[in-house]
Length: 407
Image (tube, rainbow, N blue to C red; front, side):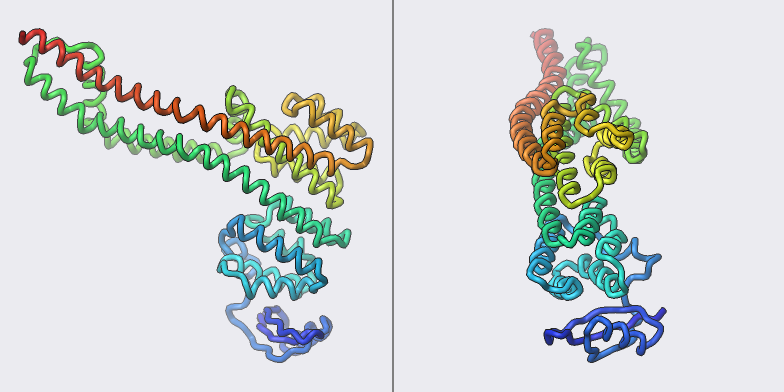
């Protein structure tokens, strides 16, 4: 079906630009007239909007900050009474991101064609996740889209804040680990062989060297002779490990393992509980049914173990049990979560109560991340110092021994 670009005037006198697919120009005019728009210019467009089969390649990645701004601006315009189509067109015209412009072009076309906004957003899961789409759908159904968009923007900002703090806490140790690994291979490939030649020159081929020095020289010799095998094997191993971790069984193994590490376990639980509380609260507050809200929340938590736990709780709730009683049975959730849920179920204010739980655990996450950051630095310094000290000892011990022999 051919695509047409158009320029039309609304009842308020505003100029609107957009794309629409129709059999011919007459159908485009009829469609615009039914929306109380007066067409000024209609041109057949060969570049139009992305075809359905190519949607996966359209748009690219939209940054989280751009999505938050888009959500807040759309909420403000819809709340001020601006028609949805006009609001989307305005956002498209003023968007700085090329990727966002491409996605908005397609969304505008779908809404013009009669689709609900949630259905148009659902075609871009890489940008608008399940939580976003379900909340928008609930907001459209209940007629409170502006309020739902405000909740979404706030929730996205909170999630982004947690992610940034985690990345910030992990950046320093990852840099140190990288430097340590590079330094180790550098020493093994370039420094230790030269030191071995010096020691052999001082003591002769029959010189007796300490065991630590012999081990270092043997390891260095192995790296020099087999580096072209070692590095590809390491690269291939990392590649297949990352692929495995993206599979359902790999994710389950990884997420189960991190919940057994003493220091990480506490932080992971707090992050998961905070995400569960805020996401479930937002969905319930938007009017999404409990079972659907649990399913969507499970996928949004980011941990397969918690997703499975919420899926089991959903089945129990469907059979007539209360969510608070099911959460209470599961050791993954602290006692305060089930207690607050129980209060929410009794008072009918589950969403309000869970917001308080989310706020509490987000503060706990901040404290925990600051604590682990202060511990990681000295631990990494000790680790690097130990590695360098081990190599230094393997060098100094034979030099000291040979010096005594020379005397």
